[in-house]
Length: 244
Image (cartoon, rainbow, N blue to C red; front, side):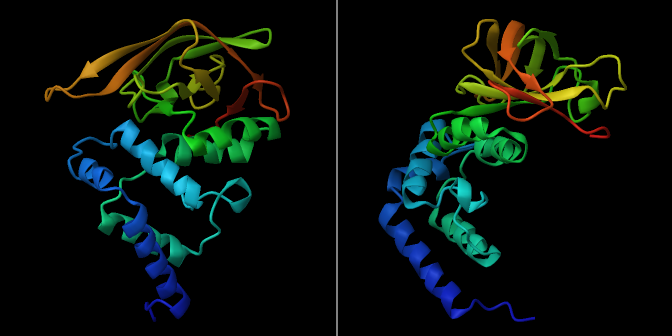
């Protein structure tokens, strides 16, 4: 098997190297090198994301129709490797790589138009609401409840170990919308504005004195939703398949 890069790939490698030499600020490299957390600092990550977005290189994993690059697997590898060697930070994946593909696959056209550009630009900064005090990797045990109330869901419960919840303006959550079925069913995906009344963030400070994770409490939080179908107004819930 020949693993050598083709002439076109070598030219692309040089293009990436030149871009990094010209556009990657030294203070971002220094902040990345000094970072001891899971994610680099929010302002550093968003500054680098904005530089990449202006170039059109922020989301190689996205389809071209939503702002992706259309690169081959080899080009994606080259770009990732060159960024690493140049000391560039990893972009924070919560919105870019965890939420965005869900919206692309299951969201309405209105939701795609609303959320994807703001994820790409960094206008929306997301956190992930999966783990709970009694439900870690076993998501079948989650208890955060979302009960139907007209066009809204009323959300009560909490999430824990929520990275950057104190910095995020939105959260995507797995919630329980049906308690009558077996635990692996009745789970839906809900988007919530962190500024909603009833959302409260409590910091979890590590032994090192770092503040990166949190517990997020939801008390009668109202989230608009159209469950299990496309094309509805506002937020849309999606049932997680049995056996997750």
